[in-house]
Amino acid sequence: MLAHRLQDTALRYFLEVVRTGSVSEAAARLSVSPSAVSRQVAGLEDLLGVPLFERRPRGMVPSPAGELLAAHARRGALEADRVVSDIQALQGLRRGLVRLYSSAGFAIEFLPRAIALFRARHPGMQFHLRTAAPTAVTQAVLDGDADIGLTYSRAAQRDIEVQHRQVAPVIVTMLPSHPLARHAGVTLAQMHPYPIAVPEGDNTARQLFDIACSQRRLVFEPALVTSQFEALTHFVLHGGGIALGGEVTVRERVRRGELHAALIRERALSGRAIELQTLAGRTLPEGVRAFVDHVRALLPAPGSTTMPDTP
Image (cartoon, rainbow, N blue to C red; front, side):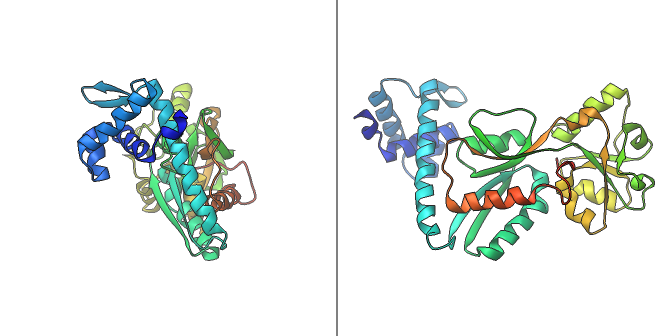
């Protein structure tokens, strides 16, 4: 049968060209010659009778047939990983690897703490955590580069299974001694007199903040704009003013009494959600499944499921 003739080596080489967009780059990563990669890709194209790539000046882009084959190949590779992981799990999660992609705010304290707690019970489990923009997190899950994605979403995504979802309104952080700290929630008008630090414009919290300001016809002139979430927090800790933030990002600092977090009471700022994502249709390895359940239990704010969440 045709399906049995789709060889592992050919698919592995093909997938590397999909990832890199270049035969020479794929060959370098695979430690083989470019001609070897070209032969394997050409063999697949001859076998299937269709072109798998569109050759463009800036690289190779999968054709519609190539996209279908790439999805098949990724799922096959993930299934092989799952079988190996499940065999190891027969010994009680003594070994295993969980590949995580997340929005940057989750990687400051929430995920390191979650990983440490999980490893206290399963010390043989290993983790690889990378941060990326929300859309890139989702794409990593779709591409099979991540077992789990923890990110923000404003719309449903095809081929993504949402293991947990919770509304994540934008919050403002401040020192407990700040004049606004007596409030659990504040308006943009109340925030306006104070110096504010905000994320860059590609951040979901910043985008919603800008929409809300436009609707209220308020213009903020930020004292600090940064892509580094720790810089936002330290601006506040050093008395610089207030900052846009997220409950999960600052949860431990609030618990320790270092910061106060207040909900920004504007309808436009409730238009996003935290999503714990995996690839739809994939049977997760036992270790990944266990960590998904672990994170799902930790995500809701203590004592509330409606508290806002991070950028």
